[in-house]
Length: 143
Picture (cartoon, rainbow, N blue to C red):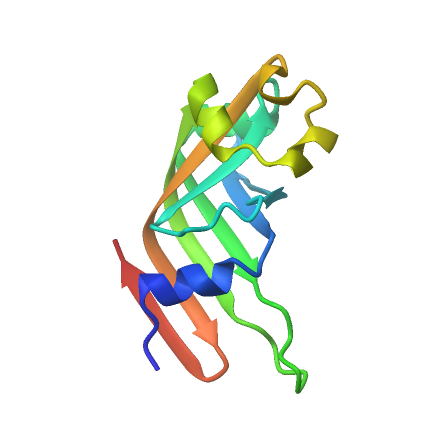
């Protein structure tokens, strides 16, 4: 069965954490878990909050190509859930209205001053290509 972007969006709503991969200064791949905060009316764009003085932000400033990896929960029968790999271009957003638009209460435990946290940055990752594996089904969506 071929999945659409709408199908992928529906499946992503059940996956909170994404591995966000960037290219480090010496060319290595650096990956870290990032919460999508269930902000997934997925149109090909993912949103993540980070702090200005992190390797994540420095890496994106140097090279905006990023990778996102997601894995869904096991099925009731124990089969692996969906695997999703996304190639994207990242953009750093420093606009408080954008912060408000994507803020959820759960972020307060990570950023105690909310959208007024010094050095807060919103990462917008716009997909170029999505590859998925769902049981024996596999496919690609190019945006």
